[in-house]
Image 1: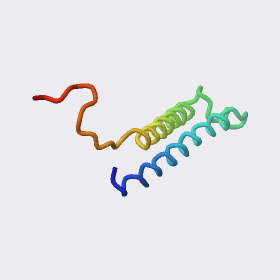
Image 2 (image 1 turned 30 degrees about the horizontal axis):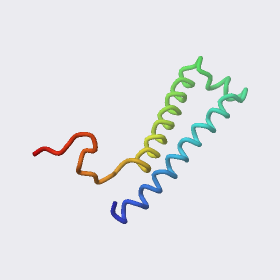
Image 3 (image 1 turned 45 degrees about the vertical axis):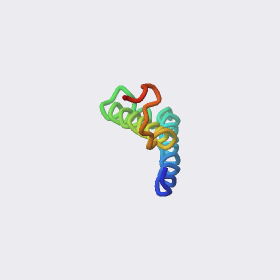
Length: 84
């Protein structure tokens, strides 16, 4: 791993955690009575916002996964033996 990659990976984990926190905050906010009336799942706008929240969650999880597991410079496949 190069030195330039390490800060990006750390930043990716932090940004992913922030996106997951935004999703969890949305779960709390959407259950408020005033918000639930306007953005409930029974409305088109509520469905769109719910889909956007799910997308934010997936994006956050993907950033965390890339930061912890991705970007490795392995050229040898750990499962298959090398070809002769």
